[in-house]
Length: 130
Image (tube, rainbow, N blue to C red; front, side, top):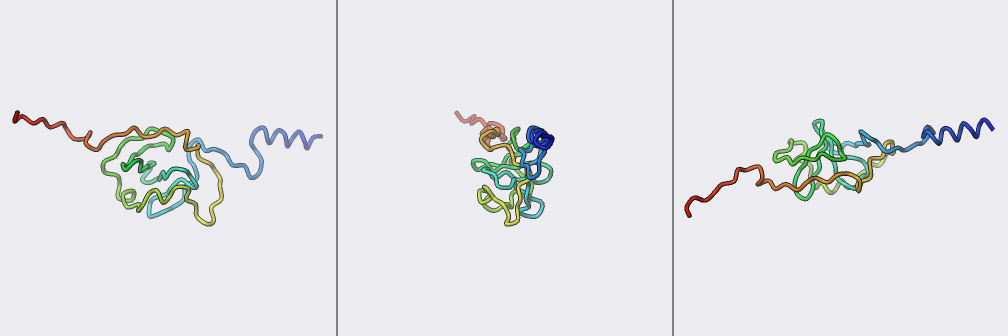
């Protein structure tokens, strides 16, 4: 009887061996290059480098302090990020010996970057010849 109560309590609180939880702060990251990691086995190629998350979304690089939202367009990402060859190659990337510890928030629940044209950073130039 006592054993079944303890097992039920452990299951209710999520404190049992082999538990895989959604990470509120840091998902599992695996190295993919010098100074660059990617969220392991994830539906989106979101990287971590130089203390920030980086997402190559629809042809532009975005940065955020959290992988779940707050994305800001960056016209000149750091070299470690720019040197990522074929970012989409890292969708669902996991090395041979990868073991799940913290599952990230499902990709359909993260906030997408707002689209921002690189031209938005340049002042509007008006043609005065008319």
